[in-house]
Structure formats: structure tokens, C-alpha cells
Amino acid sequence: MKKHQISEFFRGWIVGDFEPTMIKNSDIEVAVQNYASGSIEPKHVHKIAREITVIVSGKARMGNDIYVKGDIVDIPPGHSTSFEALEDTTTVVIKTPSLPSDKYLV
Image 1: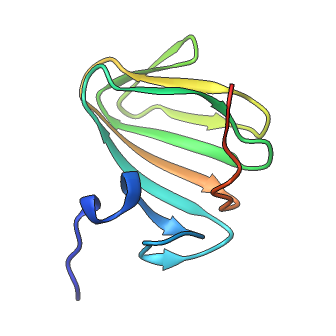
Image 2: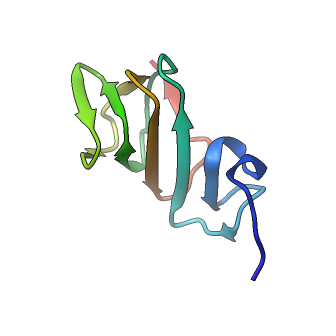
């Protein structure tokens, strides 16, 4: 067994086709991300990848909708969204396939 910290990985991304990673995989990406209240991710779109965001704790706005603990947001390819933490928020994000270059700011 080996212990790691989320801070060792770029923005919490722990699985995917990038470095550093816990598991190198071109089929899927996984991240655990912590956002302080007021944190913002700019509006973006993935042209190829599907992204699933699980709100583990807190409250966030994605696009025009509000999501809370337990909500799962399924974002298909070609659908743009933004992210704003309305309170301290933790998410788990799953993206498939793993294409680090498939993120376009809108």
C-alpha cells in the first residue's frame, strides 16, 4: 500500500492519459476536486468526450442550473457548461475517453 495526496495531482485528476496519474488510461479520466466557495471554471465544451460530474458535497451552479450533494450531471459531447461553487464543494468528475486536449473555452 502506498499513500498519496490529491495535491500531488494536477487539479485532482488521478486517472487518465496524462502525467502524473495513478492509472494511465486512454479510455477514462477521473478526478476528485475541491472548490472553495466562489471558485469559477470558465464555460467550456468537449467535442468528443462525455463528462459526468458528481456533487459529493456543497452546492454549485453549472450553466443555469443549481446542483447539490448527491446530484449527478451528465454532460454529452458538444454541450457547453461553466461551473461556480456556491459554497465549498467537492466533486468527482469522470470523463470518457481521456483526451486532455479536448477542452475548448467558449
